[in-house]
Length: 442
Image (tube, rainbow, N blue to C red; front, side, top):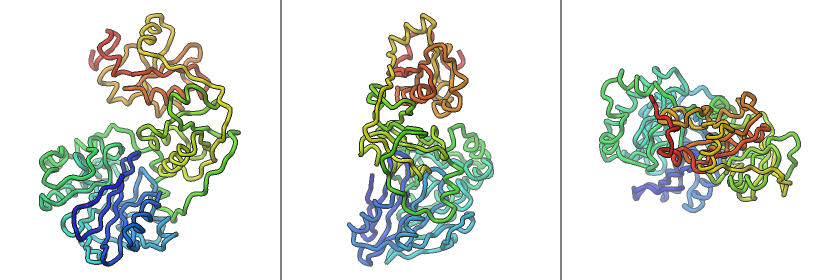
């Protein structure tokens, strides 16, 4: 998704990866014929197409920080186009770069970009103020939320720095337009909005993180984070801080021998017939890259199964979360295995007969709001590691809030040789139907 800015003399585009919730920015001066990129994704084709459309030359990359949830495209841009990469020197990086300093002004034609050092999410984090009107906040101030402070330093230390950084940004004029580094869907903040932008004034009114006036209260609130850390965090940070990464190798047809098969087709298609041992994470579903990254191991050989379009899209998103060396894709493989979903009515009957074990695959905060009595809680992202601990003498039924994660979880269990079935509908449908539903504290 792309979104244009509002300043007539500034060439401005926001690019949002809807799968990961990550935002990157294209800023330039059309008359001068130059532009820079802020926080570019590994898939750089979108920026090259925009530069060609606008008739401008890309001249530099600005990184707000070393990203922990997605692979940056700065290496490809440096290697393929010779662009210099700018980042604050506190970042512990192993690639050639131009250091950013607080208060520094960069010129892109007639456009001025002022650097604001805003640590908290990471010590090197910077925000960029474009012509005093557009503020690129990276992973500091989000729309409706603030960044998590626990991914690079101790949570309380990060929260202390973040408090000061947020209040520094909040002192800017209320009309300054805020463009964050993430929107809803990212694991870098818990309550961020799906809106692509806001204003300083609007955030002062509605953002809960800015409503906490004292530093200790803010630290206590923001340092007590229960949401999962982004998958592959250490690996992605290492990739983004290490030597420049070039373009990925093209995918080729291969066999499933010795590989983990990732079936990226829709859940219903997978259920009707799939390769033996395949794990299903539909690329058409939400958060594909994040969900796949929670289940897969960087060192295993991963082979994709899906249509050509699905495989291309899946490969792009997997590389974005650190799986750069994919094993290839399957062409018309045999699909003898099937998986049978369970309806809510069928689950009622199975529970009454005591013939199944229900696995609740939601996150802890979701389950705390209510769950099926007697169900076992294992978040879907951990099931691959715990599959050997589950009973093989009876069917396992997986359930989530509305169905998609239950289907992923059942595929993981079936790939491990267990008799698994996802519930169609999920807890949303189950609630209120039976006294077997337990609410938190009951």
